[in-house]
Length: 349
Image (cartoon, rainbow, N blue to C red):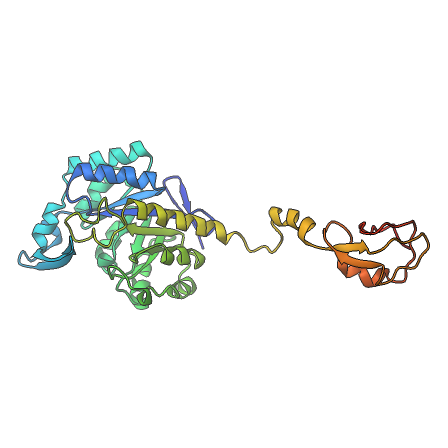
């Protein structure tokens, strides 16, 4: 599997997890909230923070299309167009957000919805392009994004294997194009039985590209398990407050939940370690204490024969190993031996 670089970060199985705090539209169209979310993402240990860049009228074709969602414990139905309009930022506001990310040394990412959105983001110096599950099969748009040469991070929610291959093949017409595929279930929140982490095995067999996990579950467990399947990029929605109005706040992680999620991923990565089977440094020390050695069970005179009643096995483990017991039985002591001392290699012949 090849390594991909985003800014100064290398992404692949042998590198620390690349963690994206998904702000999405949870800023509610308020720049100050967006800036505060950047602070929280940075403090939580995120590698990047991701937003969604769009113009509502270019995103929604039907002004009469309604959208129903949960907000503040209630079911809300409203115009999808009007809902997205409330969450738009101007060009000037986007540059302010990007500047804040640069100041905090956290990577700014955003999902564009159109070519003009992409042009805005490129003008801001974006380091990679995130493509959501809603655009995963939008081949014309993805091909347009591929002309930039920027790494593409794609979520594949709602897709079957054939669609995944079609999209990846469309991008790979540009030889060795940097692609990261995120396993994703477009269910908010995702129920445990629909996570299907075993899909990672299929994707690893079919595709030789870095894989990640766009986590829509609640809690830390799914992402921690995904580490063991080889996921190297992680993404999760977060909010300043679950009780803010809007469609995504209720299922997103709050600041404490975000921090716990990130800590869990990083600990899981450390636990993976490596595949070489040998004692750790701590175990090498423990071996001397916990393992056992050949020990003199009773005082033995020089030239006296050694037998099972005189030589036994006890702690500590820094003497001759127990596997040598049968070999020394019948040998003679080369000196006087004292009860409970460790037997040495030159104590018998």
